[in-house]
Image 1 (cartoon, rainbow over the protein chains, first blue to last red):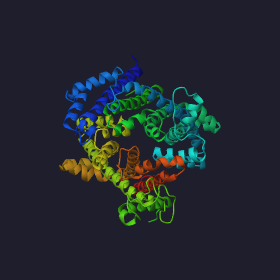
Image 2 (tube, rainbow over the protein chains, first blue to last red; image 1 turned 120 degrees about the horizontal axis):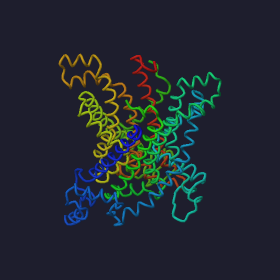
Image 3 (spheres, rainbow over the protein chains, first blue to last red; image 1 turned 90 degrees about the vertical axis):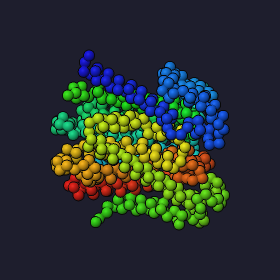
Image 4 (cartoon, rainbow over the protein chains, first blue to last red; image 1 turned 120 degrees about the vertical axis):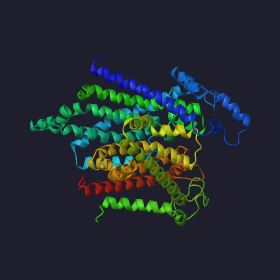
Length: 318
Length: 271
């Protein structure tokens, strides 16, 4: 086995271990916390009989360890249990909602990634001049505002005042792709704005870092134009850090999606999670939490794998 | 001492918001939950910002809301800093398995998105003020821990720390009298960022209905109450947006200035 393969195997094993520990943490977070789960679901005025019934239904009378392995085994085979509030099968509910969330995240990524890289290049090309300064000012502003407020500002001005896009994003099966895209135009715009700033700034930093190497100076001394240098020499070497940046921001997108779905009442997984947190529907929260964490860990894993594969220095660990 | 323009603006707005938070009952023209007019009245001489979704004075509600937001964010920042810094410095000084155990545990917590973890925990905890501060502060202390540990590991190997060890000083002395004063300036600069993050975090939780519970309100809660007006073209929900954005940008500007000043005193960057 080559050194790269070993490094990759190690990293993947680490990711799996992390996922396992996270599942313990999520389970423990909802089960072993101070306070009785049944009590907090039913509220203070619950009768002792109702509490006892719910405890039996949740399996709270069994030891925590065996409940954990039941839950984990179920999750691995695609059985996420049933929701307490509606009695419906969680996996069936999650399936369509996950599709909707991925649809939204996919289009947001498709718009924001090329745009961020292009603007990052632009900032490097016009470094310390007005396009660069404008970009960093916008970055500061967008980091200082929570996602849901960007959502409402856009909804108010673009959705209501101008009437360009619907301010509530309902999508259902049987809609044409065009109609779906029109429905999600605003949430995609908000998500793009949210990740764009980070992605742009990190792209700028990654390219500037490469631009200070000796071979770039050589290229400059050869008399190549700025854009040729960036395209031929800087960009190929900056791909690894940029892919890393993109992956980290997609992971960030996963969290942003939760809030944005609530703002635009989009039928995705984030809204499902938030709804059931306020209803104290523990099995649903556990399932959604586990999936969100798994996606987050998975994207971070991909980022690391790409940087291992593309960075020669990482291939020869000391 | 010359204060640069950007920092002066930041300082002005930060002070304004903090003063309004402290003296809220004296400044607010009406009570926080007092219904004083019609639903979503436009701005007028009696109600500078108009009224909200059930006819309360929006300006008064914003002032009280700012008080809640700033108080919770400040309390969570203090908790996050004390926990994170003490554990981080301790890990750096102790080293060995204690450092390993703490650091790997922090890695584990940070591998779950903060918001998702907070939602999971809040689904079984009662949503009260102390619980909110505790959850926010402890989750955020992981970031302070990483910074404090990284800074302290560098300082820990310096000669004056070694000298203190040879003098026979105890661990408490080494942490609080030798390392902490030298690690303070990056930590203080980080404090501004953590405070902003806390403001955004509590606003998001309240907006999702899992933070401050009505009739009390914070800025995120005010957005939630007035969001339905947006569709009818009523911009009441955008008022907290302006407040949060100006507060966050001002604190940012002040933090930048403090960082530049403290590092330039030691001959660092920005001099």
